[in-house]
Image (cartoon, rainbow, N blue to C red; front, side, top):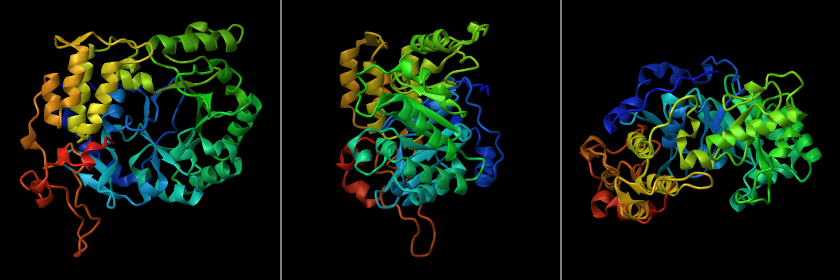
Length: 439
């Protein structure tokens, strides 16, 4: 499907308004699993990859507004979600899934992305996966199972890339999810290549038979690091192993590289007589992988999703991200981390040498030194109106003291703008040890 990205807001107040533009569609959210959706069409899509720390609500919204067709959230472990409480956050026009134990929002979403956000689940158990997915499925468009993360915290728990060695467990997880999820909720998975092409093809077929509606293949093996080039040639030997759509992931750092990938596919796969002009940044041909999933390229510069139009200037891209971070109650710690990635750039992504006339290295140090969201806004030339937000907004302790229900059975509420809880008065949240751990 073709999605029309809404215009970017011109200020923080407008950004807050944007996150609430679909508030009148509350019935859609309340209806949840009963919402009727057409099956997702993955042909020609460009999507945001799940990225720990990066794939939070602000970056997802920015990517959608620049033209991403779908966005994946960062991986959330099943047990972590199962313990969370769904909390309406009317101040920011969003829904937060809050952990009473950790007293933080483990996942946040809003109506603007409802039909285009995929929740990625980390799991090694079909029943736990189903229990977790049932909690969030009414607020997202689909559930994706992480089968490719090689990090030790995932693998040691039997999740992520560890699942590549356990096809029987994969089949149980996917079939359990498909059986328990509403049909309106899409089910997908993201894998890595196995040791041989034949093994990868066999694994893909297990996923397809078990209910996956689309599969993303990260074109690296489990033991290969991001610095090693992705194996674009391998996707050409994999795409026809299954009938469900296959998305390619790996080394899409710029529009040029996305174009080069489709040229590579065109030369290797296109049938005689096929219109080669259709293989472009606008999408693939009739055969081969159906779309691309972009990770670091979108983190460094989310305007990578701009197709057929000029992207905004770098400084406006940065300001727009911060406005959206403010509008969605992102923590200043996470906002700083994402900004550090944007300001540094990466492979194939060159950043300007200065920001607002300040040499980039010096500007980066300024941003790194700030201790709150107001400081970030000041650094980039935006106004932060703190009086409009509840106490502890934009910090990791916003939900400090949160309980799922008090002794009277009433749901706990987020802090009010004129209420500074005793804990906040004793110690500034920005300086607490918890606040120093970016999420």
